[in-house]
Length: 247
Image 1 (cartoon, rainbow, N blue to C red):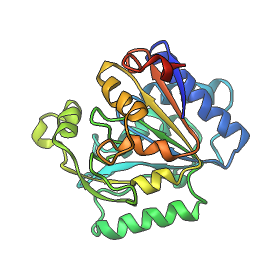
Image 2: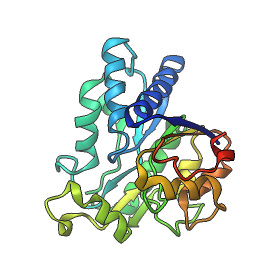
Image 3: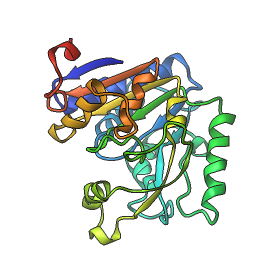
Image 4: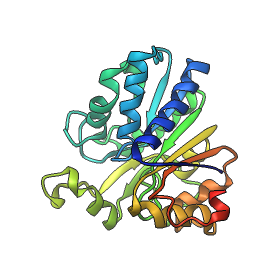
């Protein structure tokens, strides 16, 4: 793994956006794996600026999001489809028919999971996967205990994840308890991975990911077996890392 320490959240966001923009410039038909949550918002803001100011062209790109809440339609304001529209899709020239997100309101969720895996394979696999990291070490919605060989599936969210996401909903009772999520195996199938971490709340998880043993109890630690991972962390998220890890 390569570790890049940014001075703050804005610096992390700019560094991540530049990596993505460079990939799009080099490979216009790139297949991107995209994440949601609070951490990538700044990166998406920077990508919009690069698209508008530098002409970074997404017209031949394809994207696949990591996950979606079960039970929410794409029109629900707290759905990840709505999040992506607000933060990225509505502001760049990525074709709508190539911006893929699991359907959390599908009538047959098992079939939707199979369809999503098939769509990723048909696109040639994911070239660059963007990840955040949960306070408990989850990636996507692969909570602690997720097996390394999992594909896209319906998962139950950990109580800590529901609590962390409650800020996006009127009440915690309205936070969905399940999601459709790419699996660990799906994520590890990406050619490159970029993981973002920001803030003191992520420091323990990042330390366990980078310096702890590889274990399903810390899903992010399973990235240690991937050949091309870049971790971009701000100073607060990197605050517990040893001098050896920090380089």
